Length: 398
Image (tube, rainbow, N blue to C red; front, side, top):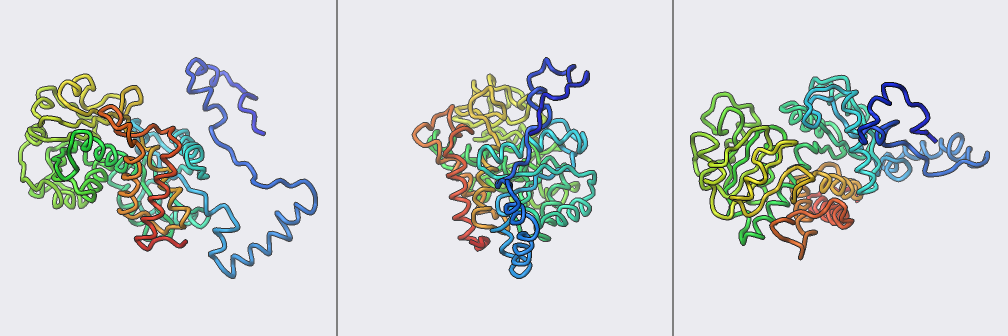
């Protein structure tokens, strides 16, 4: 077994005062066998000649690969290192601790095996080609920390190429948990999603996915802002993704700045690095809902938000209502793998959000709109709802 403490260089020792570094020393995951080989008979079954019979059976019936290999329970966690956490484009090697962490969470929360894969290529077609070529070994692909707007094209092109689920967690994991939280925030303030007008600050991967999912879930109206102002159809600088967003949002026809959009708004969702002054927060509607999700510094200081909003959420663990993707992605893949889904549909994502929201149950309050990530029911409920939605959408093979 690998001994994490066997070799400690001077460079490693220099970081020993920070508890994060000893935990990461030697890596956070490893590969272990599911069977043991103790004699020649076992060797001949696990490898040659016994393995040849299994390989031939799969060659004759490719679907058997799900039954006789690790494929049915294994996800590739893939990045190009261009948008890692809040650190930006730090490269594939520096991204690896994050990818290992993701793989660890898959196993801990949903018993899904995951392999971190950090690529040295960043061009859309190169990433797609590379992942498509290794896809036969996996039951799903979790894209991670890939910068926008390339992430949208990579996900779409890759899903066209392969018949296993492709899920960009920075988009859809965030969107699922935000939607779940907003469902419960609406309920705790006596409303439904259809009653709410929301403002989303940020039109990157998370902002686009959050907006699309809230629209799919029936929100009343939603306005999106990027660094250049409100995303409206009359702007000449919009990418195709933002143009599509503009066509689906802002039914009220609000013009001007994000400050104008927030006046009288029910909901603020921050997925950017911006800052919103207190007078703008104060201009929101009564019983406002503020999700200020930027890390480590939220767009609106939680203390400020609490003076003017009925429900406040952040992306941080040191405040109530943390919007944490770990509530979503383990259960989403567990459910998709369990039914051998070919893709993850919008209905599957909405089902996941409903499951996360439902786990809160009688504990629902302004400071408890999402469950604890350590609640064992979360991944189970999400997986069950996702699997059922996959069957309803006709993308399940079981």
